[in-house]
Image 1: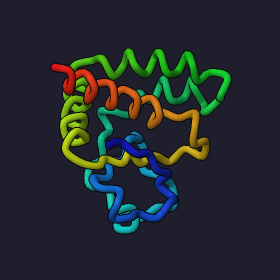
Image 2: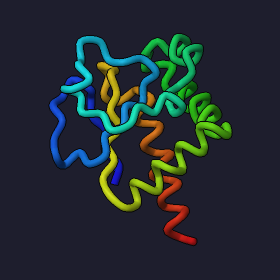
Image 3: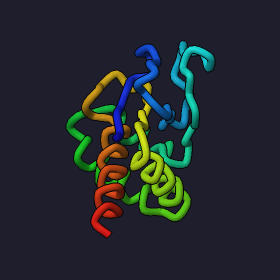
Length: 123
């Protein structure tokens, strides 16, 4: 199971394995308070893509396509597959700092992880 959660929401036991999926640490959040198990910088959108997107909902569709292309690269693919394996065994919560809870990289990453889990289940 894959869930998403803003870094500013309190951590809960039901979150399972908490993975920060941003390249930058969320402003104002302490490391202790965040209870992050893994900081997956390799899975975060590149700085260039993040800046281009600028959290503009009108660019989200194009951002999603470009981000999926980045996730297909070897280093990101390895990290993605590892998270998918973990998600197939228990809850993984993707933690992100964006204000917009719909138009952000964690949502794209969640779909990608769920796709990998589903394809593995059919093998």
